Image 1 (cartoon, rainbow, N blue to C red):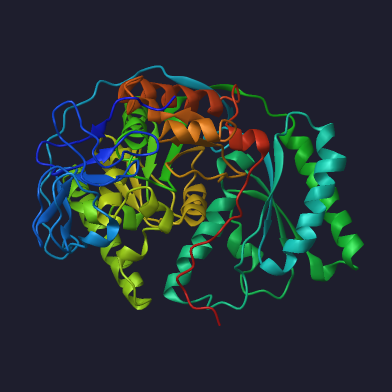
Image 2 (image 1 turned 90 degrees about the vertical axis):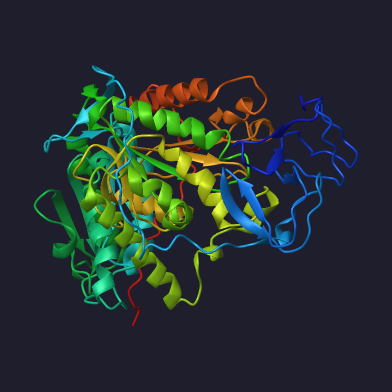
Length: 506
């Protein structure tokens, strides 16, 4: 049911704007209990001016200047995106690291989930047969083979969850030795090592590609290699893939879940289709869950460079030491250069949907995005597709694009991803479960079979950040244990792997 009385949300004392919480927004003339009155219609999640803002004056939300008024904005009026000028980003070349003293959170000891134990000591949340391509040329054949494996072979092996084709658009026609090629190649290699494949991999190549299978697979993975140019046509190729797949299925089928420590988990955090409620409800709740995970010894992965770039001055003091701080700044600088080569800057991030959801620009979006990280110190910074070596809160530098970020996080080994959304998305990953948390109740009502947890209850006073955060934490453990499925898992809504490739294509 829609809120009956007018409700606005102001986050910080110094904020001179508030977002309208009522479903459907509020109309001109709406009067609040404290006498504040709207002078224009204001849509839900959009900002209303709490005071007169002169031309050139600061527009403040999250206690931060998110923009400047391009013309006079009267008190009580809707601050449309067209009225907001972008501020300059924090200058990473001038930033100086000074470690923030943070409250030590009490450890949560003895927390467990039911997972699969791998030979290398890692744990898995699913038991999957992975079939990886070394080049896009073989993707069509692999698709057909996987379909037949699922229909004809998989039912014989009830302890194997799925068969996943790890296809990508790399492998040939690329500058394989270019410096930036290290990113897609590293990502492909680490995708093959994903713990949910149990140390097994079937790799299918053509035979003439630049990315040779021996580069993709190293000694950490037991790999079976099939080269299609050695086969006698299409039917023989499919038969060979199926024959070798069954040998791996036989081994995987012997695996059983066992008690694993939560410290074995790597959980990715991401947001997509964000709105102005994301930084008020869903992201703070995820941040609370992130702190619980860190307290339990897990690894939590914050990503999306352009969605933290304008809040880097808030994240830098949380680095555990100067080396981590230097890595954090280096990743921001690298991405600034990368965007400038494309003749854009971080303002290219904000989507039309974000703006319809009340986010005026990337600065406002970033302020709401970084709260997913909770309050823990940042223990390590990794580049796109790298694997973490530490526990705790990790900053994994990735693009903000949902599917590219998701692929990078999979390469970095996430077991579960928590994905917040205000506008809604059917996004999912085949290799690891995705738990969707929405920022507004109206989205949970509209998509009850896609959204897993409704954080919009926080804005309505029906739940707290802490209670929803604990709900997210509990669901992560249930999903990791195979006791519960997220909706994306249930429906098998899976996005393609999309490698981040900043290197030239020849």
